[in-house]
Image (cartoon, rainbow, N blue to C red; front, side):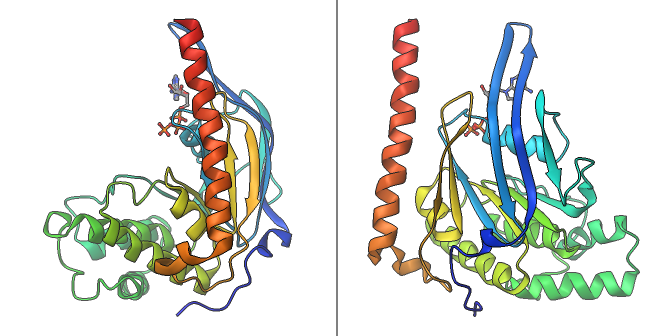
Length: 276
Ligand SMILES: Nc1ncnc2c1ncn2[C@@H]1O[C@H](COP(=O)(O)OP(=O)(O)OP(=O)(O)O)[C@@H](O)[C@H]1O
């Protein structure tokens, strides 16, 4: 059961993360591609921020800058007040579960704890505790090929949580799952988040998911991605995800986000037509 957390207040907490006028241009053999431009946004400690935007607008690039896979072309990113980002404090969950096939589920979840030098007994305890939180007790000794897609992704998520990172970034983690499994995992993620209040940045194509999970929804423009709008989700927690669509606040935000994204997607199409 989730703790009651009023929605829309967490971003009043001190920021844990700040993007300050960040831009990213890739130099390729066919010229340069500006993926992001003028991104300025702060994320509060313990906030759940969801990010939506048209395909190719730079959402994954934003996350890659955070985890150090790419460097900003200009501007700066501050994490816990420093631009020397301690990436050991950041967990990353990608769309494809990337559990190691040669390790059992338990050994997979223990892996980041091993890297951080946690003693075997303690890491075994922590891994079991997290696996139980997502109803995977009893499956500890299975290998990834013996698990369903939803089970693997749950393992993937708790692996990122197990070493208690301060920030977790998730790039469409539920993308490939069927609707029913997706709903279950969304609810489990919210339950864990309510208990632990980690800061989460969650990218999704699904507007329903963005509203259901987030304290705020950040909308990016078409490429080069910049901040189009930021909306506070005015729906109290705990949220019953199966009945959200009945709430006027949900329907109103769905409609606003739908309009904003349509505007961006139509804008991209017009540019393609003019260029053709
Ligand atoms: N390493 C790279 N080299 C050159 N161009 C890149 C590189 N990475 C991304 N891009 C370009 O930057 C733009 C943004 O890409 P990105 O993957 O961040 O978008 P996205 O919003 O995550 O897309 P999608 O929603 O389709 O997953 C795209 O035009 C992409 O082709």
